[in-house]
Amino acid sequence: MSSIRETQPVDDRSTRARIRDAAIQCIADHGVTATTARKVADVADVSPGSVIHHFGSMDGLRAACDEYVLEIVRKQKQDILSSGPNLDVFAALRNVEAGPLMAYLAQVLADDSAAVASLVDHFVDDAEGYLAQGVESGMLKPSRDPRGRAVMLTIWGLGSLALHEHAKRLLGVDLMDPDLTTSPNLAAYAGPVYEIYGKGLFTDDFAEHTRNVFAPTDNTDQTDEPEEAT
Image (cartoon, rainbow, N blue to C red; front, side, top):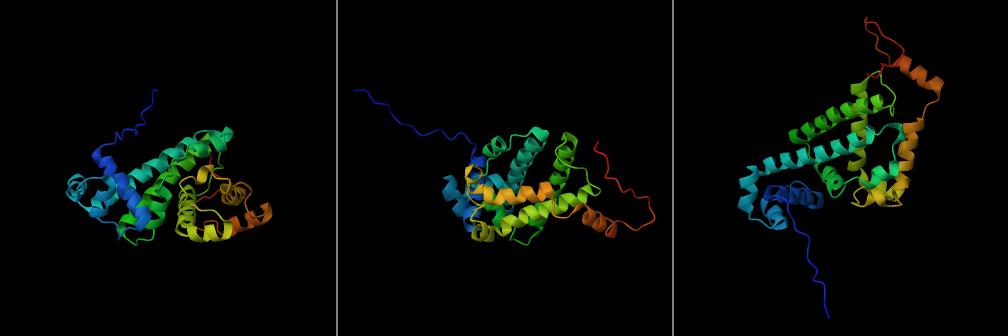
């Protein structure tokens, strides 16, 4: 009787990539301060010396992790917003590579450091770019203050990760779940989010009133119309 030998998939990542991914997983599981070169080495199945050899220091490893997470988020956002108004939302969600990235961000955002400030600044810069892309594709409305909008949306989005335990408690949604994008529980979170973004909260009259209250008061020419998409 013949049999089929089961084989494990070959891990063809470079040693550097395996160490980086192991560090992301360790930080997601244990936090920044508890993640050591030895812990990362154990997960990556390398020596602690190899961790330092490839990244110079734990700070260098953190920087590489941040850069990788930024790149993943940037690509996903750009892919979604370049689709325009005909976006297949469910297909886009199925293609999101969450893994431990959200848990990683939730951990590092609690670290009051220059590295985190730089990470948030990069998120804002990227957000301004792909929001402009969304305006150009016809998915988003233009903004009078594109930079300010990017800052606030980034803070709100990252804030939901920092407060993920309360989202779980109040909505029953675990934002740290690697399989969240395919979970039926996602609707409890995504539904209100897209209602707020899509419908807004204010009536048209009150929205206009608040826009006038907070409009710039300097002597430069201002317009009541949103800037045109370019």
